Image (cartoon, rainbow, N blue to C red; front, side):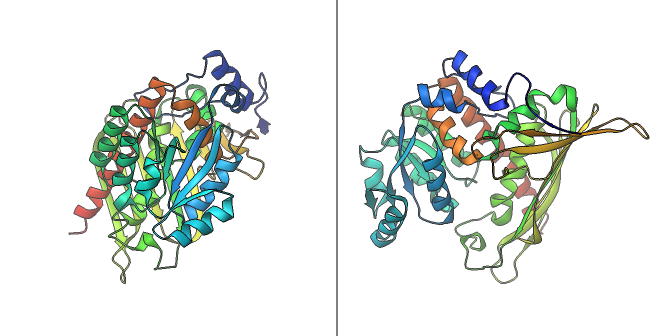
Length: 378
């Protein structure tokens, strides 16, 4: 049985009404996973347009430039790269007037309000902190070098009264909030979360194969999403009791190209996870099991072409299982909603803190699985 969310209008419409009623202030609990959801209509009406500068011109920066173009309350006005010709080519491609060959110069420029840092992990903290010290809001790609690195970035943002968010897209799609709001009825106590994010990356010239630029390899790049899913969907406030993780390295480059493991939390719940760069197919599966039911997401990281995203659920026992599916949306892509949510977040102190907390929690769990995987190598 397939259903589309039409109770009292679409999820997007309810999101709009909620944020409008709250005057633009809406944040999830600061104890657990945070789904930052502010409706597009309310964002467009209440949030001032953020003028963006992008540091980096790689594939992620190009993708997010398009998302900024789709988003309300967002305008891409500047880009920086190590070489002016590269910056200029990116600017011409995306209709940007201002190009820099030094990110520090762009951070000092008064023509932008926020900086999106799409650089390798190894240099991300320096740029994020400098952006904050220049009074610019900060959106940093993930992962970060460590929890301590995230905390230093957050401290700089707080000291300069600017917002900070990581670049995780799926949490901004209305499906995430839809599931969280219905957790009690559809799942009950979520005692198990299993997730896999695997894809094929054969190009050893990619920076993900360079341990100096991306020290955690696949565990940092893809495993971040495994950890964020656990932050979002497991019970709020839980802490790690034990962790066991393993990695496999590329023989030529030494990069971590896959990882897997299990975390046991202090409420008895577990998350098992797998990520990798050498899968024969793209896999983005998630299964959330509770004492009242099971939810499956075939693609927990993305959405369909019309912006909608689906999940299926099961309840019952042998011979009496009830199955159904739900489609949430249509909506903007999660990445475009991220920039819209950012514009609403920067003027909401509670939301800012919730955003920081969510990033810190994800990085803390990522550090734990990475450290365990490295220990288990010896």
